[in-house]
Amino acid sequence: MGPWGGTLPSPGDASFPHSPCECPQPPSPRGRPIPTPRAAEVRARCAQGACLVSCRRRLYDLSGFVRLHPGGEQLLRRRAGTDVSAALDGPPHRHSANARRWLEQYYVGDLEQSLSETVEEKEVATAAQTPEQTDLCYRTVDVEKDLVDWQKPLLWQVGYLGEKYDEWVHQPVDRPIRLFHSDFLEFLSKTAWYVVFMVWTPVVLYLSWVSYTSLAQGNTRLFSSFTTEYSIPVHKYYFPFIFLIGMILWSLLEYLIHRFVFHMKPPASNYYLITLHFLLHGQHHKSPFDSSRLVFPPVPASLVIGFFYGVLRLLLPEVLGLSVFVGGLCGYVIYDMMHYYLHYGSPRKGTYLYGLKAYHVKHHFEHQKSGFGISTRFWDYPFRTLIPEESFKKED
Image (tube, rainbow, N blue to C red; front, side):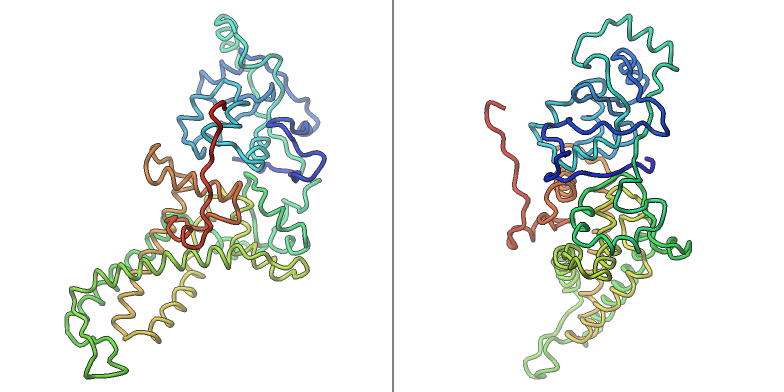
């Protein structure tokens, strides 16, 4: 993956493509001419392991994106060397306007003939023997026309976008984001997925042991602060159920934070709220495959976690509150690991995670105002934010 992107037209613009691949011709990088490869050269490259596809004779190199494809790597591999014009419209899935913009980041040139046309095997064999003719990996980007300067940290720029911010931030690109000028702050804002597991799993295990052994002493009673006569003893055997309640409460909290905090629409006139939104979640929607920003860094996470622990201490007896808290903390760890997997994993087709991955990708590329459940779709049902299933007419 490289620093690609550029100006992304909106559906209301005259330049927006109204058919799947009628996108404006991107400029050639550094003044070099856009190559015009032959179909035989493309198929020779695909035979060597590349993943090149065409759409109405526009050629795209998806080799760097293939393992991230929401439909699975194998599905995209099977389409290598073919025309995907019909596949973009489905079934099984109609690709959104954002998905079509995303495709343009991998544009490498125009074909002399469509990949759907017959190519002689002799031509493919000849092209495979001349690899210098199949060097198609030109990346096109026009950063001068974008709304921000990608060569500088973005955090202090986005606030000036005003009313353009909401549309801009929901047009995803495949390029890394730098937030801060300071190398130290930039380092703290990035986290590898395994860091969350290594930091918080020992905490979950230790607090679970503390909670269980404390309940085993038999001194914990529910409602004891209101009445001693009718208070209910909480035995150690209740710990798994209390732990599970904590996980369920976390799943609800995950939904509420994602919907009402991460997806708030900051006022166009408020520079600071726009900046805050971009820091919390906007940068993830702008660059959804930036692997270093898919989980919550432990330092700011510890502040949020500490706040919720304090709230539970106020509402529940100490040991009971700790038991609920550790269940919620375990739910958070599972959520962060699952979120990373939904972006970078390749679940087997037909599995629960496969459906959840497709659901989450739809949230990023097409349905930003629904589909707020990440580790589960359960809360989208009662809150009526479920992403609707696609339907195709029989003749399609």
